[in-house]
Image (cartoon, rainbow, N blue to C red):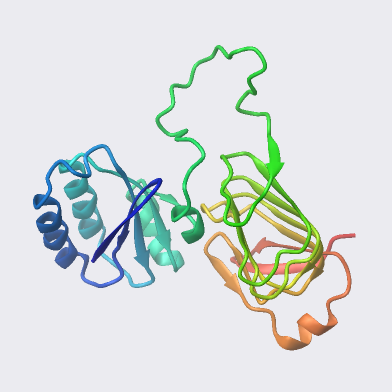
Length: 245
């Protein structure tokens, strides 16, 4: 078990099983500095191996004893995602979990009154995206130009790219992804578990495509033949692509 600090909280690497072994390790680690992490939030990196609900509950309870709130989970399989949801954890994309939040809207007071010019919760905002930038929930990040190999753009809302996404480029969004060009890198829509999220591109030729917890890898022949606007979505438990026109 590893604990990694980020600007937005803690990442707990809990890939090994059984999780019961991690409980004692976690307690021993936190006892060395009992108040150091108090008030922090933690995302649990649960990986792909099955676990018992009681074990996960023990992890969450141990964190709470030291004033740490279990804020979400990164899951690599549907089975682990169901486990996390049953424990009350929200699903988080790995890139989003590791990125700093623009603001903490989970503890912010939800007032019915707004300051002049302030947007309501139903109004979406938009701004330019920079490499590695994470936007607020419901926000749409825009990137004009090519997303090159090694570039990563993530958003807690949607992502719109006016240009191509080269192989090795990565887009991760809690909402939808729209590429007004060729999508040849990795796209992960619905990274926080939204199974209604979609990926649209004028040329959908991804190295890897993710929607919520589902993963698809395009074969070489498809990447060569795709030549029309397409949209990818979840249907019957899998990722399907269809003409967007």
